[in-house]
Length: 568
Image (tube, rainbow, N blue to C red):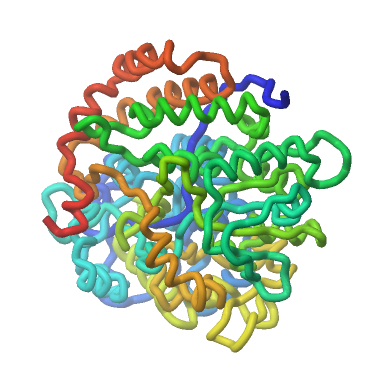
C-alpha cells in the first residue's frame, strides 16, 4: 500500500479569485498615519494641482515574480508622468506560505501604499493598516466604480465604516461574469483512461483546437471514479512498468484535493452548512465527519499521493506535469491557454503525447454532486485593493485616478492585463473577438512584463472578462455553466456581508487556534493516525475550548444567504 506516510501540517486555503479596495474619506484610519498621529492633507486633491508621487504597489499573485521598471510600469509612468511606482515583490497569496509572508510584512509595517492583496479587508482597516474611501471621492476620481455601486446597490451596503452610509473600509471586488464562468470541473488524463480501458460517459469532443484537450457533458459516477483511481494507481497507466503513479493528487489547499468529493456529502470547504436544524461550519458538521472517514478509505487504498500534507498547490501542479497524477480538481475556465501554470496546459505542454479530459463534477452514488461557488455575489471577496492608512487625501486621489485607468479604461485595462499585441501576446483568432495568448517570453517572464500586476483582474467589468474565455467556453460551455452545471454550486447557509453580527471580531480572536485544531484533526484523520468516530467528541470539545461555541451562537444570528440574495 502506498499511503503510508504520516503528516500533520498547517493549512491556509487559497481560493481562486476575487478582490477589494480600501479607502478614502474621513474615518479614523484616513485621519491618522497608522501610529495614532493626525495627518494633514494637502490641497492637491481639491485644486487638481499635480505634484510628484512615489506609490508603492502590490499586485496579487503577480507580486511573486514582479520586477522593478517592467514594461507595463513604464507605460503607466508615461501616462502619469508625476508618478513613480515601487513594486512589492513576494508571495502574498492565499497559500500557507503567502499567509506567513503577509503576517511578517504587516508586523514589519511594510504594507505598500495600495494594490491587490489577499487579506480580510475589514481586518486590515480595523487594525489601522488601511484607510476608508468616501462615495464622493469615488465619484470624482473613479467614476466607473461609483457607477457600479449605483447599478448593483447591494454593494453600497458592504464594507461600510461603522456609523456611515457613504464611506467604505475598502472597495469590494466586482466580477459579475465570474458568477457564471468560475464553475468547477473534474480533470483526467484521457490517455491513461484509454490505457486502462475506461470509456468516458457522453460524447467526447475537443475543447481546444489543435490540442489534445477534450471534454464531455456527462460526469463519471462515484463507482466509476473509484475504479479510475484504482487503475490509475495500480494499473501502470503511463506504461513505464513502475509503481510510481497515484489516482489523485493532493496539496495543503483542501479544496483543490476534495472539492467534488466533499460535494457528495453536501459540504464545501470554507462555507457553513445546515446540519440537523442548526448552522455549523463545514469542519464541525456531521457531514464533514462522514467525509473524513471516506477520505481515509481513499488514503488507505493508496489512491491519494501520500505527500499531500507537504505540497503546496504549485508542487501539485508539477506532479501533474511529471506524469505522476491522473485525476485532479479544476475549473472550466482553465481550458483557456492563458493559464500555463496549471492543468491542462501544464500537462500537455510538458508531455506531447498526453491527452486531458474535462468533465462535469463526479456524481456521488447518493445522487449528490456539488462544489464551492466561486462568487457569492457579483461583489466578490478574496483579494482586496487597499489604500494604506498613511496615504493622505491628495495621494489617494492619484491612486484612484490610476485605478480608473487600469481597471476600467479600454486602453489602460487591456494593456495592464495583456500587454502589447505582438510583443506580449497574439490573438487566437479575430482580434478583439478571440482570446489573447501570451507569448512564451511573457509566460516565463511575467515579472518583467508587469501584466496582471497593476490590474489583477479582481475588479473585472464584463468587457475585460470576455478575453479570459475561450471560444469553446463562449460558444459551447457557457449555456451549461449558467444552466445545468450551475445547479451544482453550493452556497453558505448563512452569510453576513453587511457585518450585522460580531462574527469578524470573534474570528479575529479565535481564528488561528481554530485553524490549527481543524488542520491537526484533518491530517490525522485522513492518514489514519486517529479514529474519527472515537475522537470526534474530543475534537468538538477542543474547538469549544478555543471559543468555537461562542462563534456558533453568533453565526446562527447571521442572515440566511437566500434572504440576502433575495433582498430581504
